[in-house]
Length: 309
Image (tube, rainbow, N blue to C red):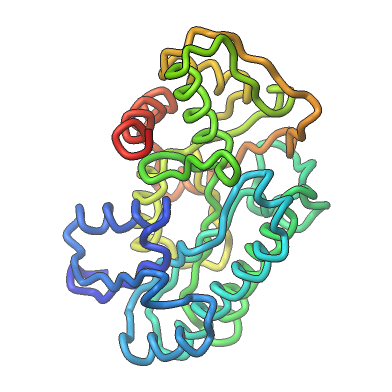
């Protein structure tokens, strides 16, 4: 990409898309095509086709998706598989038809089998059963990967796929019904502190392990790989480090300054026992994360207080 390249960021208002826009602008890329949902319904095949024919973007970051935590995935599986399949098929096919030079597709680490060897290597895709609580979303993302690989194989399109670990940071969703575990915890601890409550109840056992990457690190990785990676194989994007949910809760409790107790509702699901990505391929390509979990939690909490609390 050069500084005048015409770049379409699909999903630019979301957690990932907004971070990619910030990173692009910081690096001097200003010829960006950004459309709100009201301006362009990405699940509408005809609307997407007309948009690509008119705008002719040279590069595409496919960050648009319907996302959510365990509760959202369990409650709305039909919406998760339909909307994500529609968005990615429309954009990938229109990118091919309109000569996009390069497309970057963002998946999710939940594409890997539930009981996967740890840390998870890229080649473990499709070797076992998926986690039931987010199977619909995972299958949609797997379809996006295979679609990118198929268009590369049949037509020679330079479409690449990245698999981020659990993300958090500026612009996160803090809705208790539909958010991921980390922002939900930030809100729960903050509101408990504001109400002078003596305890907070969290889902599960607290023993499962998760890896977390700040979304600004992901955006930096996306720009790096858009410039430096041109292969069919998936690339994991993460830190290569994980913590238990209990450890995460205690870190957030300290950042927020909540002094009460933590109770665990073990009747609620934990999800996948562990999900740590092997990021050796990413490191060998020359990129490594720079934001620590403690530092990222502190900056995310400050953003939450200014924008949501």
